[in-house]
Image (tube, rainbow, N blue to C red; front, side, top):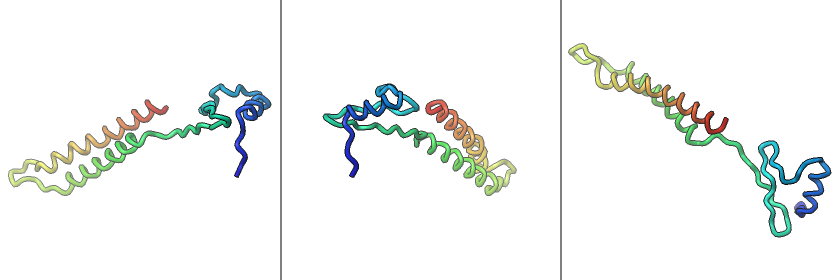
Length: 110
Protein backbone atom coordinates (compact mmCIF):
# COMPACT_ATOMS: atom_id res chain seq x y z
CA UNK A 1 0.00 0.00 0.00
CA UNK A 2 1.29 3.44 -0.88
CA UNK A 3 2.48 5.76 1.84
CA UNK A 4 0.12 8.66 2.50
CA UNK A 5 1.59 12.02 1.72
CA UNK A 6 1.60 14.62 4.48
CA UNK A 7 0.32 18.08 3.79
CA UNK A 8 3.82 19.53 3.86
CA UNK A 9 5.09 16.98 1.33
CA UNK A 10 2.14 17.67 -0.95
CA UNK A 11 2.62 21.46 -0.75
CA UNK A 12 6.33 21.10 -1.53
CA UNK A 13 5.59 18.85 -4.52
CA UNK A 14 3.04 21.32 -5.88
CA UNK A 15 5.42 24.26 -5.48
CA UNK A 16 8.19 22.34 -7.28
CA UNK A 17 5.80 21.97 -10.20
CA UNK A 18 5.25 25.74 -10.15
CA UNK A 19 1.65 25.45 -8.99
CA UNK A 20 -0.18 27.14 -6.16
CA UNK A 21 -1.26 24.25 -3.92
CA UNK A 22 -4.62 25.76 -3.07
CA UNK A 23 -5.68 27.13 -6.44
CA UNK A 24 -8.44 25.33 -8.30
CA UNK A 25 -7.06 24.29 -11.68
CA UNK A 26 -8.39 22.27 -14.59
CA UNK A 27 -11.70 21.39 -13.00
CA UNK A 28 -10.01 19.78 -9.97
CA UNK A 29 -10.51 21.07 -6.48
CA UNK A 30 -7.77 21.81 -4.01
CA UNK A 31 -7.29 19.04 -1.48
CA UNK A 32 -9.12 19.02 1.81
CA UNK A 33 -6.84 18.91 4.79
CA UNK A 34 -7.06 16.03 7.22
CA UNK A 35 -5.47 15.56 10.63
CA UNK A 36 -2.00 14.73 9.27
CA UNK A 37 -2.64 13.71 5.72
CA UNK A 38 -4.08 15.29 2.63
CA UNK A 39 -7.30 13.88 1.22
CA UNK A 40 -7.79 14.62 -2.46
CA UNK A 41 -11.28 15.34 -3.74
CA UNK A 42 -12.03 13.74 -7.10
CA UNK A 43 -14.48 15.72 -9.18
CA UNK A 44 -16.49 13.57 -11.58
CA UNK A 45 -18.14 15.50 -14.36
CA UNK A 46 -21.28 13.70 -15.27
CA UNK A 47 -24.45 14.73 -17.01
CA UNK A 48 -27.29 14.39 -14.60
CA UNK A 49 -29.22 11.14 -14.79
CA UNK A 50 -32.54 12.98 -14.90
CA UNK A 51 -31.69 14.62 -18.23
CA UNK A 52 -30.59 11.29 -19.69
CA UNK A 53 -33.80 9.69 -18.44
CA UNK A 54 -35.87 12.47 -20.01
CA UNK A 55 -34.14 11.91 -23.36
CA UNK A 56 -34.91 8.19 -23.21
CA UNK A 57 -38.54 8.92 -22.29
CA UNK A 58 -38.75 11.32 -25.25
CA UNK A 59 -37.59 8.58 -27.62
CA UNK A 60 -40.01 6.07 -26.10
CA UNK A 61 -42.90 8.52 -26.46
CA UNK A 62 -41.99 9.11 -30.11
CA UNK A 63 -41.86 5.41 -30.98
CA UNK A 64 -45.02 4.65 -28.99
CA UNK A 65 -46.80 7.44 -30.86
CA UNK A 66 -45.64 6.10 -34.21
CA UNK A 67 -46.88 2.63 -33.26
CA UNK A 68 -50.27 4.02 -32.20
CA UNK A 69 -50.69 6.06 -35.38
CA UNK A 70 -49.71 3.25 -37.74
CA UNK A 71 -51.44 0.46 -35.82
CA UNK A 72 -54.79 2.05 -35.18
CA UNK A 73 -57.66 1.74 -37.59
CA UNK A 74 -60.08 4.59 -38.24
CA UNK A 75 -63.58 4.59 -36.79
CA UNK A 76 -66.39 3.37 -39.06
CA UNK A 77 -67.50 7.00 -39.37
CA UNK A 78 -64.18 7.81 -41.09
CA UNK A 79 -62.78 9.95 -38.29
CA UNK A 80 -59.44 9.10 -36.69
CA UNK A 81 -59.65 6.93 -33.58
CA UNK A 82 -58.70 8.09 -30.11
CA UNK A 83 -55.57 5.95 -30.26
CA UNK A 84 -54.47 7.68 -33.46
CA UNK A 85 -55.01 11.11 -31.92
CA UNK A 86 -53.07 10.07 -28.83
CA UNK A 87 -50.31 8.79 -31.11
CA UNK A 88 -50.12 12.14 -32.91
CA UNK A 89 -49.76 13.93 -29.57
CA UNK A 90 -46.99 11.51 -28.54
CA UNK A 91 -45.20 11.95 -31.89
CA UNK A 92 -45.19 15.71 -31.26
CA UNK A 93 -44.47 15.56 -27.51
CA UNK A 94 -41.66 12.98 -27.60
CA UNK A 95 -39.21 15.03 -29.67
CA UNK A 96 -40.16 18.16 -27.73
CA UNK A 97 -39.25 16.41 -24.47
CA UNK A 98 -36.01 15.12 -25.99
CA UNK A 99 -35.00 18.60 -27.21
CA UNK A 100 -35.93 20.11 -23.85
CA UNK A 101 -33.74 17.55 -22.04
CA UNK A 102 -30.81 18.24 -24.39
CA UNK A 103 -31.07 21.99 -23.82
CA UNK A 104 -31.34 21.60 -20.05
CA UNK A 105 -28.36 19.22 -19.91
CA UNK A 106 -26.34 21.77 -21.87
CA UNK A 107 -27.59 24.60 -19.68
CA UNK A 108 -26.62 22.87 -16.44
CA UNK A 109 -23.41 21.16 -17.55
CA UNK A 110 -22.10 23.18 -20.47
